[in-house]
Every structure is written in C-alpha cells, then in structure tokens.
Length: 112
Image 1 (cartoon, helix red, strand yellow):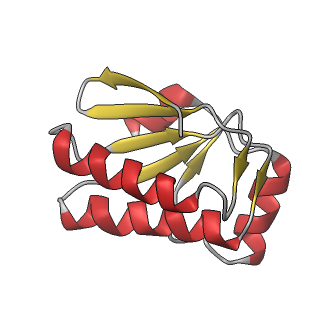
Image 2 (cartoon, helix red, strand yellow):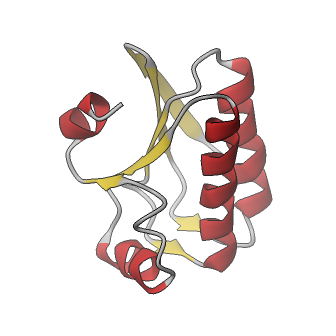
C-alpha cells in the first residue's frame, strides 16, 4: 500500500495513493495505520482519501481500527477528501458520528 506522509505541526497527513479500500488492501491499511500512530511519534493522523474511489465494509473496518489505535495512543484519526460514494457508505454504516470527515484540509488541521 502506498502512502505519502507529511508532517504539519502535530499532525501526520497520510495521503493514500490507492483507488480502492477493500478486502484486497484492508489488512495492509491496518498495518500502515498502526505503524503511523506507533512509530512516527505523532498520534494525530489526517488520512487523505482523495484518490480512493471505492471502499467496502472491510475498508471501513480498517479505518475504525486506525481510529481505535489513535485513541489508544492519545491521538485522533480524521478523514479528508472522501468522494461521494465513500461518504454515502460512511453515512449508511452510521460512521459519521465516530470518524470525523473533512473536505477542507486547513479546517481539518485546525480541528486537532
């Protein structure tokens, strides 16, 4: 799984370079999210999903895993640039109350 990382103040912005967040990549996503919150020294992660065109329940499960891991390390995981299909899936799964989603990077960074 390819992710481009950028540190901005106390936030690690992780720009996912995959088009699908599904069973084929969900285990790699969990591993990557765990690595980000444990080894980078920054437990606040903004996950930019601008390139993700499709997600399924296992992909959402990976995001929830990342959310729990960030919380366990006294941080937060927030999402950025969800496409309409992924937003709809989040709404159907009722995850909007658990995972904060933003379309504006500046607003997302200020929310930490």
